[in-house]
Amino acid sequence: MREIKNVCVYCGSSIGADPRYTAAARALGVALARAGVGLVYGGGAIGLMGVLAKATVAAGGVVTGIIPEFLDRREIPFTGATELVVVDDMHTRKRLMFERSDAFIALPGGVGTLEELTEQLTWIQLGRHTKPLVIADIGGFWRPLLSLFAHMRNEEFFGEVDNVRYLVAERVEDILPMIFAAVRHSPDISETAITERL
Image 1 (cartoon, helix red, strand yellow):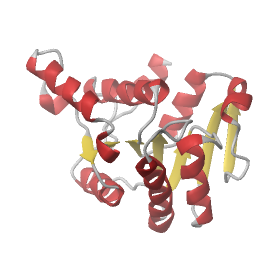
Image 2: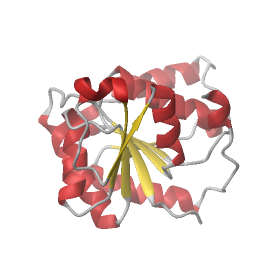
Image 3: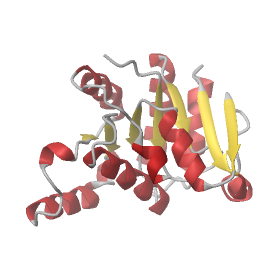
Image 4: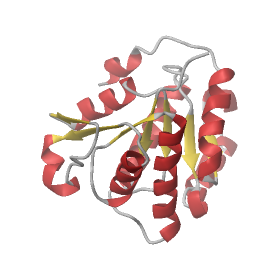
């Protein structure tokens, strides 16, 4: 069985309209720290990213932030991270986030979060990796996307169900148990195509 040492979390650089999103980001940070699982994320100090990272550190966890240099002013790097990696571009950021992570979680967020989530789903569908991916449907945030996925499947654009594997959690406390269970039942495969893509 693969060991879950680090989890990549995609989430918004804003906090969003629903206070449940902030509460979920904070609770996830605490849960990661208590489980001894490191956080890998986009490196920002604001929005849900900042809430998540600060909560992880405050609970004694390890945080690796990876941020492109051009986002220094927009997302404000979290200098309290255990490790803050400044890279040249978004492609390098995404590649390093992938390489340093054993699983992925998508909290609520905007277009960037959606892009990162769907990119991972594409790589899973193409068989480029078997790392677990959890869509954290906090307060029903991702329900419209999940409905779109169902529509794509019904219209036969989504591929075989087994080829597009993701988990959906409505509560933060279910996320890590889902990941650990998925790893117990998932084979290891070569993960080489990420560099091919980037």
